Structure formats: structure tokens, C-alpha cells
Image (cartoon, rainbow, N blue to C red; front, top):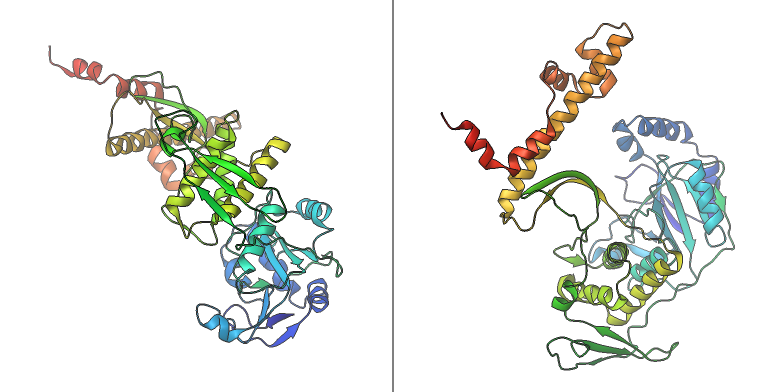
Length: 432
């Protein structure tokens, strides 16, 4: 059962309780469909007002029914009536093709799949056979996220108990009232036995051995290497060969493993999964114990509270084995242009100043080249060259076009040469 709120997101007192069949009927024939279709048009046109209009739509609390939608701290006990036995997910990938892909891949598990109210993705409901409680809700959500929806662009903000779901309009909504899933929740009472071995200087003795007793599996062990040993072999960022004495400027698809200062509850599964994918991508041939040891170090030093060791091993094995069996890593990269020669010692502040300087030159270089190309295109078509027409053609603002309208092209090779050979500049500027 879901709590139904009629008057938009500011309405925290539910009007009634509805079930899944009532929700499906409403989505198929939504009386708010005209407004919803207008919201979708505005979103496609990148007009921000769609967000405010969306907030006025009726909504439900898909994970539970409540006295009022005020569930922080002590209010959770006071206002939570019961869990709905459904778990809600929002995926930010638009398009009818993507919805059909979700139906084909997960239709045997999902109770409901519909286009979201703004048309920017899909909304999903899983019905679980487990009895959902305040204590296990987060574990169940993350288990489904990690074990079923690992490949999808799930909105991580939509994972709290009182999360709202704006009621959409979708005549082609998918639903199956019989579908249910059972989620395996970690039993924290299973024994976790720690064995400390002496740490010496190098070799296979330089590790900790953790053994775990599991009711469903035989006892197994895992080696944990000291972090200083791990960091000598494990790449945490893309290696870039820098040919110049100080700095290179070239496009490189760059990956890096980022460690948050604090890894809070509710984020560990997602962050650790991303780290494993990123590390396997950067270290495709390294032994798995190096990656696990790095994860162990991160969990011990940055997670508050730390993930249970048995759960950490379970998560690592599932993600790592999936990567190795499919050959697919869901890694993230950026195109990085500025690369420093590690042998040339620069402070962090000096690197920041140089990077900002070069990126500033490159931005001007790009804008000027766009303006020159637009002038040539307009001229060759016999169209009068104006700043407004160039702005429309390039996507640059009229102010930017005005600034660089008559600018000479920038030679990026010369910019980089001057930075790498400062003595040449000094010599050229010396009086005869």
C-alpha cells in the first residue's frame, strides 16, 4: 500500500492509501496527462520551469505508507505506518528504446515499469518477499542495486524510505502483479574471524589473512597486503608519458580513482562498486588481491562506519567476478589535456596556475577558431556576416563573439613551447 498525496511536493499529509492496481490505472489514464506532456516538452527544450511544474503533480511514497511525509530522525517511528513491500528505483535514461530494453531484461522480476513523469527516464517497482524493516531497508535497496541493476544509471538520491514518486502518464505502462523477488540479506551474526600474521619487509609474509565462516559456503580466506606494497604496483590513474621537460598538452582519455574524504552509510556499495570497476580498467592484468587490499584500506580509513568484512568480501567477489566473466568495466574517463612531467618538481599551487593558464589559452583558441570557421561558412554562402548570425551558428554568446570577432588565431604549440622553454623567452627579451 502506498500513501497518495494530491497537491504536489509541499503537501505532506496523504489524502488516501492506494494499491498497485490503483496506481497502474491512474498512470494509464492520468487526469494530469496534459500537464505531464507539457512538462516533458519543457524538459526536452532544456527549460528549467519544468522542474517547478513537476513538483505540483500528485505523488505517492512508493516504499511505504505514512501518517505524514516527515520521516527524519525520531519522526520516522512516529509517522511510518508500514512498508509497502515494494522497492522504488528511478533511472535517468530517457527514450522508448531504453524502456523496452528494461522490460526485456528485467520484466520477469519487476512489478511495474513506466516512463517517469518528466520523460527523463523510467520508474521501477520491485516487490520483495522479505519483510522490510527500518533496519534492513537500505541493505535490500543496495542489494537490488548491486546484484540486479548494476549496469543501469540509477538515481542514487532516490533511495531513502520516504522518497516520493510523482505519478506519471504512460498508456503503455508495464506491470505484473505476480512478480516477486527474494533478496539475500547479509547475516551480520555470522562469525568474522581475524588472524594477524607478522608483517615483515616484503614477500608473501607481508600480509594479513582474513578467514570467514559462512553458513552456505565452505570457509575461505582472503589475503590483505599492506597499502605501501599495494601502491607500488597498483595504478590509480592513467599513466601518461610526458615528452616535454615541464608539461605536455594533448588529449588523453584519463581515468582516476577518487576517494571521498568520508564515505557515509548509504553510499558504500555504490562507491566501492565504482572503485572496483575503475581499478580493474586501470589494472587489467593485476592479481585481484591488490585491488581487494586497496578496497580494504579505503574501507578501514574512510568509511564511517566501516562495511562489515564479510559484506565487503561478498561485494568485491560479485563485482570483480562479473567484470572478469563479461569482460566489461563500467569505468568513467575524462578527456584531459594538461599533463605534468613528474621529474619537474612543481607545487600544487604552481600546477593549478599553469593548468588554468593553458586551459584559458585553449578556450580562447577554440572560440576564435569557431568564429573564423563561421565567418568562412557565412561568406561562402553569400550571407551577411554579423555577430548575431555567428552566435547562432557557433552556439557562443554574442558577448564572446564580440570579444574575439577580430582576434588572431592562437598557436597552442607556441604557447606550450614557451612554457617548457622559459630560458628562450628570457634570452629573446634581453636587450642587445
